[in-house]
Length: 160
Image (cartoon, rainbow, N blue to C red; front, side, top):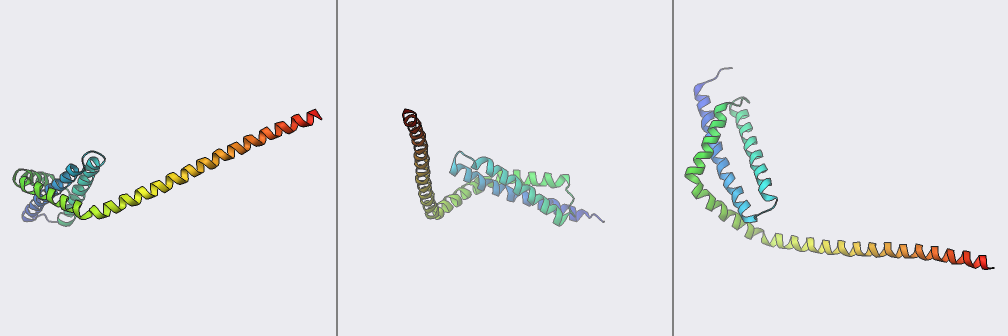
């Protein structure tokens, strides 16, 4: 296996490009976190980001470096991410916020309908749950009444 310096240099620049793309992706996820506020979105978006970056770097090393992960690949990705943060972050973050706002507006009817469906299913579930509770309670009453009836029958038999 021969290792050419131009191939390694190309691999480094591709790693820098991957870092730039991951920086843009991070800004998109950051805008999603800002839109949704607190909750499970933050940790899930962080997990999604690191899975994406890890998969991208592994795919890059498989395609261009015969699967070998080199230190300069990680350095190139970190440099690309830092370059994006310093130079392009001021541009891509407002753009990502606009994309998230547009997606939220476009998905509003779907979300509205889904909330209605969820509320309807929840109300049906509550009605069925209440009905089952009433059935259980009436079943307990019948058992208690039977026990009382048996006690009364025993007392009556004892009287005869």
